[in-house]
Image (cartoon, rainbow, N blue to C red):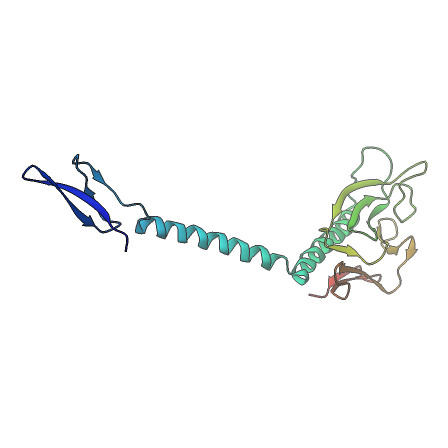
Length: 202
C-alpha cells in the first residue's frame, strides 16, 4: 500500500507519520487537503443519468421493429384513403378554379403517395394535360418501407363509385406495403369497390 505522509511538529522537531490514502490530513503549513474521488451523491446522479439513457436507447430499438413500423404506416395510409373518400362524399371543393369530380390517392412503387383532386374527370391522377389534377397533400412512408406496386384509388363524386387506375372497381383491391430489407414482411390494405370500405390486416 502506498502511503501519503503528514508532517507534524513536536517540540520544535518535524515528525513524519503515514497517512492513509483518501483521508483528510494536515500538512506542515496547517492546510487541509481533501482526497480525490466521487461522493455518494455523484455516483447516484451518474447512475440515474445512465439509467435514463439506457431507457431511451431501448425505446428507440423497440421503435425500429419493422412490423410495428409497417403497422403505423398502414394506419396512416388508411387515414389518407378515408380522407379522400370523405372529401368526395361531402362534396368538398378544394380548389378556387375548375370543377372537382372527386378525390383519389396515387401510390408509387416507392415510399411516396399523394391525395389529389380530379379536375379533368379522368378518374385517375393526371399531372399533365390541359387541366392537370391538383395535389392536396404529398406523403412519404419512412425510408425502410415502400409500396409493392403503382396503384391509384379514386372515389367518384358524380357516380358514387370507386375506380382503380381509371377503371371501375367491381369487387375489391389491395394496397400492399412491404419492408424493404425483408419483403416477406408486409401489410395489406383492402378497398371494396362495392361499399367503398377500407380496412387493413392488423
